[in-house]
Length: 272
Ligand SMILES: [Zn+2]
Image (cartoon, rainbow, N blue to C red):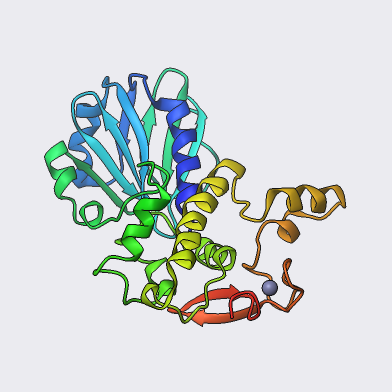
């Protein structure tokens, strides 16, 4: 499943095609949403934003389309009216004079008033969104040390969207490696210095991944590996998906374990 950085890049692409423009036609495939075909046609799209792993497309008349891709949903941007050749089910189409933003296969689509948006069960329970709310490392540190979260395993916290919105499985391994955190650790087991390093890594690697389309490794190292002709899979991550390969910092082999039914990669020496 895509994580915060990938979803925000997708939101940027959709925004470039439809934000600020009036729709020429809006189409919902689900019968219970078809009443909105005409209500959203001719309206201006005011913004397209990611919230955690959901996408919010807002209109001048105060309505917002909430969509969550889950595992199967896929957005495609095409020239106006040129539907791509695909066997996927078209679920939502937003057309303007120049472009069409098409959502295929997703089943989690709603149209909400601003009041309903505030009360939405998924959105209401989301923690701060690093990429969309300019969350600082100090705020993340406070959250790590809070009564609500400080007794829980860090491996679990980092996948819990109530803790922070948008973090996912590759970012979990990467920020824990960067901060040197053991997979068993809870915030209450860590020194203030370690938690500060973790908070910094959470914010900085999420932002870096957004800016670089998914690269979390040290950028100077990435340049060196690229100049040696290495493919992306060999320089993208510090630890994730590098089972059995030498740690970049100490040479020890990276280990893969299961943490909360999701794979986690770490260095037993640097994260001992
Ligand atoms: Zn190491």
